[in-house]
Length: 545
Image 1: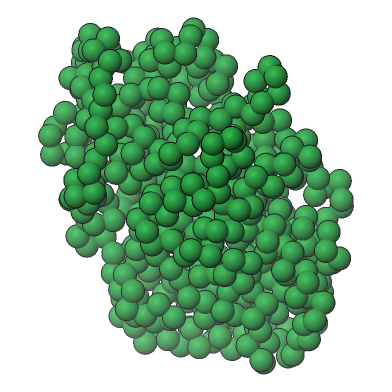
Image 2 (image 1 turned 60 degrees about the vertical axis):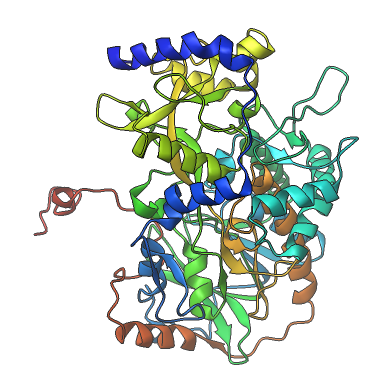
């Protein structure tokens, strides 16, 4: 599949302006320009896209309509039908999730003497961690410092970050890189053994470490192998659907739901860590997403019912460069590393319209402005719009073969559809990428609910109102490790009381009293993409109308 005639005509304009653009110094946005751009074109500010919650700890706070429908939905569980007096599993630390945060947490919890159990919705590694491409930030080079990294994170987060969380993030970063190396992670290096590092958007120093364009996969391979070698038990296809509290208000484990047998089971745990990732598969405002199939906000739903406060859920990160063509892979990530290597964003006329390494919120808003207000986007054969990411500039600036060496997975992905991104630009448009907010935590991942910890994308406050590239892979490891340590130490002193699901009963009663639209039940667990006529049939051809 190659580009149609109209798109090829636009590509010729891109090629004609390339020489001039290579010499062009494109200005950064002023604070006033950035504010106006965001408030006018960023999806978070679209009228009618959010509503205030009417029940729960965040009552009155605005959140996306799609999330509100889950937070205010009844439980999958009928508490009276479960016997909590005879748990199926009894452990020190229960870790819920499928990706990097939960694996890091499990490793450190076990190292600190805890009996650990991992439970996951799908398979171990079925998570956004595996899909992360660009890299991981750490201030471990001469001329850089954690203090400088701190300022970048806070500036990128619109100065809304929780200072203690950012401090933990940036101070732990160099030791996290060393930890990965000691475990066998193969990060990119020069011939002399020096780590390769490049710029990410909104950063003042090139501190992005990577493993080609499959950094998350390499990190996950490394820590998952380590956890398996240590025989840490993991229950797959058994998502947690409710937290269990005790009669003292402490978190005391979780209710699991077997996706194969559809049976419930009970885990009693002295401490519990939620590391369930984000909410990309809610497709806020109908946007496509880069997220894994299981990213359905389960952790937020469970923690919220148990009484945990959420932060910054009125802000969603849309990655500026999601695939806009070909349609078979619409919404998939085109890593920021492409822009870090020198590719430029240009409109249908071949002109730049934003500095490529502005923060993600600003670049996304600028692309939307170009397509919606200025009508200078490129239209695909099916009517989708996007702008060009002039990827051939990478090989022009850095030498032939750079794309195939630095971005092998992406190069092969486009090649499957007859597009050579080293010779032709690629079409991009913002895609839902990251959950900026989440459950409120302290620097050790502790929530306000005793014995409940949260790490990774399910937590809030680390990144403020906008995350910088490379800080998500760092976040999951920093706070996964920290939560694992503190949960293991805490488990040694915890005494649990009588297990209870009274909070679920109260939530269901509150739901029954509201008039706002909500889902039939939550957590969602898996998105449903079947069309209405398909949903009338079950496997085996039995019609249910």
